[in-house]
Length: 169
Image (cartoon, rainbow, N blue to C red; front, side, top):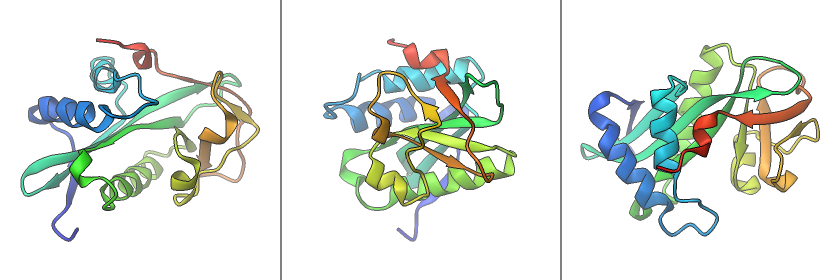
């Protein structure tokens, strides 16, 4: 995708971002179908640390959100990746990977200590994510909750996503 542009969102993108997210998750069985509301709630709470859009031919075809997470040990500087949304007709073409790589690079410049993700273990392993026994996300099978540390070690504790992840409208 040589003409793929990845940039931070701006206010004019908000409606298109919601549409991309809604379409991307429409047929996902594991989805609660409230991902677009989560991103809006994160934005309203000033908890959208990184919000990137992928643009092809002047159209937003993908979006990625990163927000802070809390770890029960009290360690700071950890973030959660997601949701990541690509329009169905553009999925499996490297757009999501480009968004993730760009976001992880930005997180490192934010002096982040690490990042967690809930998703396909095989896919996220490509970026260095791995399931670690030290970090727990309750009510989720351990292999689907992965972490990437920018330091040498992982903190220990239970991870809590921002309350915006409970948004349903």
